[in-house]
Structures are given as structure tokens and as C-alpha cells.
Length: 194
Image 1 (tube, rainbow, N blue to C red):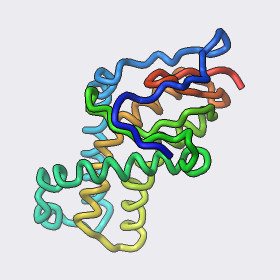
Image 2 (image 1 turned 90 degrees about the vertical axis):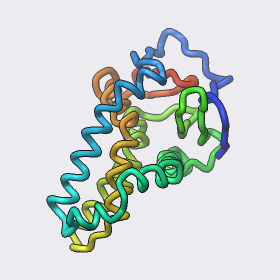
Image 3 (image 1 turned 180 degrees about the horizontal axis):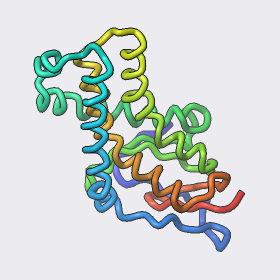
Image 4 (image 1 turned 135 degrees about the horizontal axis):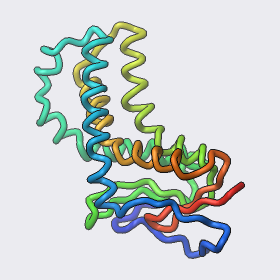
């Protein structure tokens, strides 16, 4: 695994030819802008599920200041979020093909895999932090009856932070056959039939 401060790395050994199709996807800034409403919906739905399906009550959430918790959690939660993406990469993200980085000019944290993977695996990589940090804690709380305001806030904030991942999953489902092979060249995603 590598760490990078800057743009998502390009693959020196990957030159897309005619067998590769380009995913129609917006620029990083436009992607974040378009995905933000999805994050807002995720945040609201997650919060409603925590309040409606668990023993958590509004007073427990209110005691953990909403804005302060979000600000304090932002960077640590995003870092954990990106590491979970990397764990879903081949070799658990431990190969030199995995990069975790921050692209300051786009205000974008990322976990990038430099290699081919199936479209299904790509969807799993994109969805893993939402499953592990938002859905799983909620399901455990529902199943056990144990609640914690701090965990609920982490779960709910992560639903917001996963907005670009959810948008990416939607783009893949709309444009790419499930049995296709995907690969990235920097920000850009390409796919070909398997």
C-alpha cells in the first residue's frame, strides 16, 4: 500500500485501446456536487433509522453536539473510510497497486487500485465503507438492543461521506455490464467486456 498527497495516480502500464470503453462520469468537483444530495438523503435516512429502529433516543444524540461531532470526526472517519475501501482491494490493499491519498486541489480523499477488477468487485469496493460503518453498526444495534449516541453519529455521518461512492455505484450499474472488467487511469474509469 502506498500513500500519496496529490492527484490520483495514473497507471504507466495502462493505455486504453479500442476494447476499453470510457465510463461517462463528471469531473471530481462536479461529481462531489452531484453526489451531495445523495449524501444528504443517506444522512437523513440513517438518522431516522437509528431513531426509529433502535433504543436510541433524540436526547442521546442531542448530548453529542451534531456539528461539533461531525467536525471532530471528519478527517479520522474519512481516513478509516478510505482504509476500508483499500481492504476490499485485491490482497487486502497490501499490494503496491493500492494507494490511499488526499487530492488537496479537489478536496478529495481516495483509495485507488491500480489494476483490473471485475465490475462486481468494483461495486463491492465502493460500497464496503457504507456497509461496515453505516449499515453494520445499525444492524448490530437493532439485533442486540444496545445503543450508543457516538456510534450512531459515526454511522450517520459516514452515510453522508459515502455520497461519492453511492454515485459511483449508480454510474456503474447504469453503464457497465456486471461481468465487465474495470480499470482506472487516474480519476477516469474504463471498462471492457470480460
